Image (cartoon, rainbow, N blue to C red):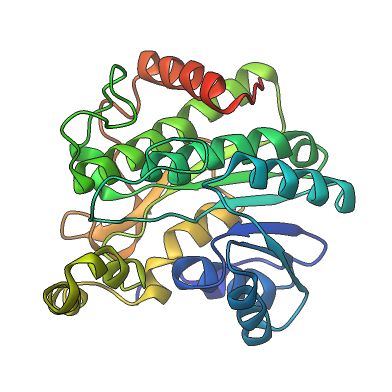
Length: 301
């Protein structure tokens, strides 16, 4: 594959990286490459048994810690323990996410599960670790967006999708919220004079375990749909390249957004991706930030 590849990742020795959802898919590839290039990698996972298996597969300097992004209590516990053990964190990759196309579900805190996990959990985590990030040299936060954010819209009167719930739309809104968060975080970091930079990436259409899980509620038909969907996706090793570039390329600037460059950003070599108008709107960013602080109880910047 032409263009940017994992071989261009610079030496990561002496750096501590936290990757959420690191036991499978994009997170596993990201954690593996970071460890292979010398980073100490914290695998932040909901299923610690799967995390331990991933750690054995990766090798290198890795540790497994429990984190359930659908529970603010879990987020706070994880952040407190991590901060106690690591005075400086160089990289936070907000990779974990879910897509469930069945009935509406809620998190432990009563949030619609997609936005609660994909955005609000990461919002709280980032805020709780910001001091440790600021203590590092050239620290970064990478937020994982999706091409689905381009067709989504945030309804602040129904942020939890309680009216006319549609799972695919709820997922798209959660990824739009994640994208808005990453851009607004960068604005606030610059205004505060922070050394931390916020960067975004999306994987296009990538072959991960999220696809079959999304359709598991449909039984045999769902399995057939999932298998058909896998035919149009790119390998996970390629899908992880945009977030690996966002995480490690020395020339990256805060606020940049990386994704595949081919066929409507679904696959291909890594390039700068296009944000939707709503994702880059400062007024939307400010409104979402206020809502997220109120919902999570985490205030920063």
